[in-house]
Image 1 (cartoon, rainbow over the protein chains, first blue to last red):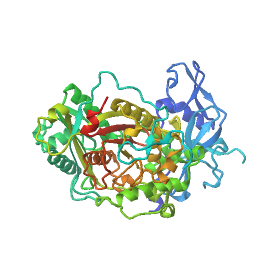
Image 2 (cartoon, rainbow over the protein chains, first blue to last red):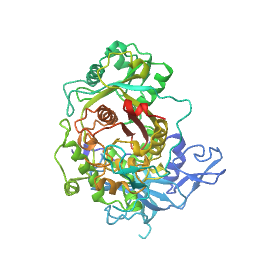
Image 3 (cartoon, chains in turn green, purple):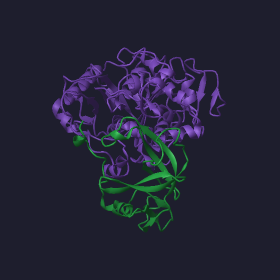
Image 4 (tube, rainbow over the protein chains, first blue to last red):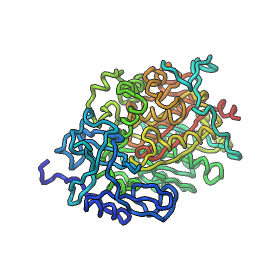
Amino acid sequence: MSDAQRRPKPAPVVTPETEPFWDAAQREELCIQRCDACGRHYFYPRPFCPHCFSDDVSWVRVSGRATLHSYVINHRPVPGWEDDGPYAIALVELEEGPRMATSIVGIPNTPEDLVLDMPLRVCFEEQGGMKIPKFEPESI
Amino acid sequence: MPYCPVRVTVPSGRGGRGLQRQCRSGRWPPIIPGVQTRTVVIGAAETDRLGVITDVSPVQLHAEAVRNAIDDAGITRDNIDGVACVGEGPAGLADYLGITPTWLDGTFVGGCSFLVHLHHATAAIATGTAKVIVISHAVSRGGPASSPGALDLANLQQQFEQVYGVGPPATKFPLGVLRYMKAYGLTHEQLASVAVAQRRWSSQVPRAMMRELITVDDVLASPMICYPMHRLECCLSTNGGGAVIVTSEEHARTLPLRKPLVHVLGAAESSESPLASQMADLTSARAYRTAGRIAFGQAGITHADVDHLMAYDAFAHLPIYTLEDLGFVGRGEAGAFIAEGHTSPGGTLPMNTNGGGLSYTHTGLYGMFLMQESIRQVRGEAAAQVPDVRISVAHGVGSMFTSAATIVFGSAEAAAARP
């Protein structure tokens, strides 16, 4: 397949309830929601708390610190990832509790280098004209 | 064998089995008061061929499955007043078959949809909404299929998973495996042994696509698809289908049936998040635990009563989750249980005796084949028949760990012995 025919990596298709998340990402801030009634952070974005069902929720900037919870390394790239070699799809656990899927950058995506529970921090990379949150080792 | 607090060796009460299995708590909730599951399977059949099917359209293949099941039952098309399927849609299939239905179910929740249909059918039959229901599944490459519907939370999956390169099931379903390995010490060799065990079964099954015996080394030497899953730990991709026909026990007595009744003793469904990151625990599926607990409770059975188990296996780790989340073994024990041969031919808990999605067939929606093999085993007509199967459990999953359903099938003897 020629480069011209290749599909690029997709940008997120933003929906109304996720707009604050992606707006923050464009400012290179990781923002998720916290329930003002029960005090818990949650992810993915919703206009009410999935724990206590309260509407009393706020967008807050979180620390960006996380640990590597689990991952796979895909050897059969989907469109857009053909030039990357085997790449990790990771689940990270934010310091504030919620988990999210992400990419791990700044470190080879191998079983030897990707050690569960290793400390990570958020970073932002452009993809399809938008900045999206990814994670890198805290030690680099 | 490592010490196991939930498996105790006792003299076998039946069928020469040496182990008694218990759920972790040692008991299940009582049968739900007032609920009588009176549904029976009267017909069950697969399509003539499994594999690559290009000369039959998708709905044509559905019709083949249904007609085979009608023949298997010994009834006529005109007995049927309920239709459930996905892909073509139940109204479309009813029209194609010339059925005037009074009950339709097109619920699409991934590969366990057909178990969910059977669960729903038990309610329809109990209330008389339908008398005889056919549940059909077929996938062919003989033309485009109707759409089964978009992913649940498709927008959110796009924004929060697909932008990171999540694509086919292999890139998502095994996301918890490394966490499971760290939590419980599951080895790559034990994971590979799932595929080895199932090939021991499929080697006895002429219709299975993969029948050559394999070793753990073969599995680990097969190409890496999505670490830690090798090709032989991922399911096949085939065409084919099947259909199941159910009715009430009372109505069944009025029909000129050809096969012994297979009773539906328990049926349940549940779901968890469509986003992998939102599973409460990556090492255990809430939907599995919920559906399993309810189905076992309805059936009034313990694990010691289960003679045969079908555990959906799109990937090799799923039977491990099934064994633990349904309570056949304790947490972290299933890898060793399978590697030691307890689910293989001659083992205490024969599992995936058609070879499973890894070796028999996998149409992308494998649940129909779970039920077919459970029904064959209870009838005593399976290719790799387990002696004296009175109770068989079929447990399916859909769209990663998003949805799950459990069916407890029983022989007439098992149904008569219900408390």
